[in-house]
Amino acid sequence: MQRLPQLRGIQAFVYAAKHLSFKKAADELNVTPTAISHNIKSLEDDLGVRLFNRLTRSLSLTNEGEIFAPLVMDAFSKLHEAVGALSHSESNGPLMITTTKSFASSWLSERAYKFRELYPDYGLKIDASDSIKNLTSSNFDVSIRHGGGGYDGLHFAWVLNNYVVPVCSPKFIDTKGRISPSDLLNHSLIVYEWENFAEDDPCWEKWFALSQTKMDKAKLIETYSDEYICIQAALASRGVALCSVITASSYLNSGDLVIPTDPSLYLKDKSYYLVCEKGNADKEKMIAFQEWLLDEADQYRESRIGSLIDDIEEDN
Image (cartoon, rainbow, N blue to C red; front, side, top):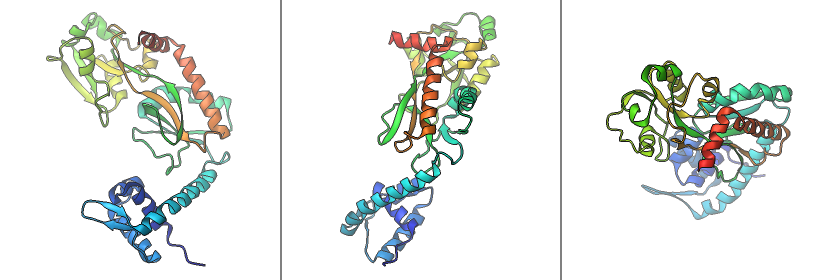
């Protein structure tokens, strides 16, 4: 029987063929492009054929590479499924969840105990990170993602819509007086600086444009890369923060934060979706978690702040 080449060479080839780029393959596998190049060279030596045409600014498959790629990609996919069947088995530890820092701290963590009460045999392990994890090449069972939906090749379910509004402490209003959009220009504004900011992401500039107020003289006094810190600054009456309703929901429900302007002046944010591999969607603990999560989302929409979101959506 012919000896098979080393797995790391096949893995490097699969990702390089997928992207037609050693650099992109290296980024996805969290190694250096040099390591990808060396592993593929070793694979080519083992097979006795050249798999890539290495040009100055591009990479393409040779005829042998074109033959080899679909076969080895299919085999590698089956290998992933086999490993996943073991690592995601019902008896193999807690449900591994990855989600954003703000959703984990302000929404999911406050409700996770209810899931454990309903399903004591299923533990939860929550990774709070704003970087998107690859569900295929990681140990995570499910992701709750902040995005626009349409996750090709994955199972996904809509959880909640989200909106962005100004928030501040009641004490700040008592001190400064009722705040209108033009009044905000005379007060301190707290800025949440989104990671990898995109044109469709909400910001103060867009909020002032919505309220038909020029922002020329606005006081942007504090800028943070963490939305939770912005909320803490607002709670301390240091200014008005433009924050997600979901992130601020517990403080809005308790009255520790208020929306000082017309609630109809809001910005539409991305929504939250549950996302998992299709092979995991029909497993018992995944079914249980999805049903529980969507039920919690329904209950949230019936709360005082959830009703505010419903009112906003009815105005759309």
